[in-house]
Length: 198
Image 1 (spheres, rainbow, N blue to C red):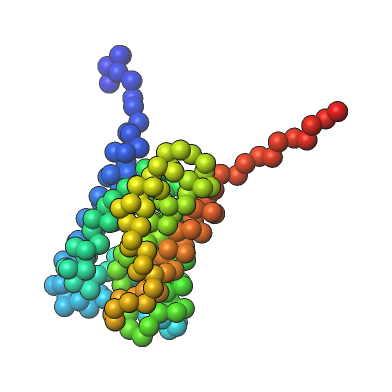
Image 2 (tube, rainbow, N blue to C red):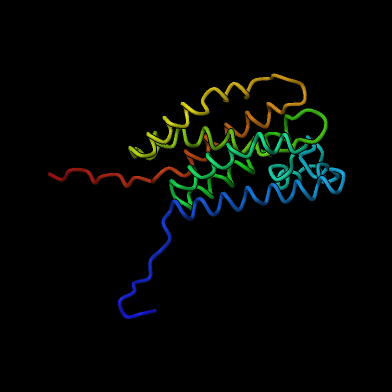
């Protein structure tokens, strides 16, 4: 390093893009492996109300039923994951962990028979997290992001209601609920002002 060179930290947008891009690439690699294995990995998803199915909470968002399922989730993962991490890397990762675990556990408690897999729970959690975080942080940029997410993905929230067979609306519902929980849990802790002394 030369004398005039000053070390710089990567821009938050660059870090967010690398992290969410790497995660999305991982989803594609896992689906390729799963395809070669005859989709045997799908049995590692969430099996509701089965003690052995609890481990599926950790793996379900990484697994997809087929390439069409993964392709449908890829763009929302890239866009919403990027925006969640853009608001603060550690905050975004913590929100993602809350959505992943709480949403998965809710799905385990209430899901239909069979295995629940896919990143949709994360997607719905990111939607609601981004929609409401501005209410808790009171930051103008977060409010703007929430408005943009509402315009782009607000209509997707109808997916929390029972719809087509084979679609885990429970995963959508509890992912969305976990996103609101994450925004509340990670809200800035404001220090109360001292009482006025006479």
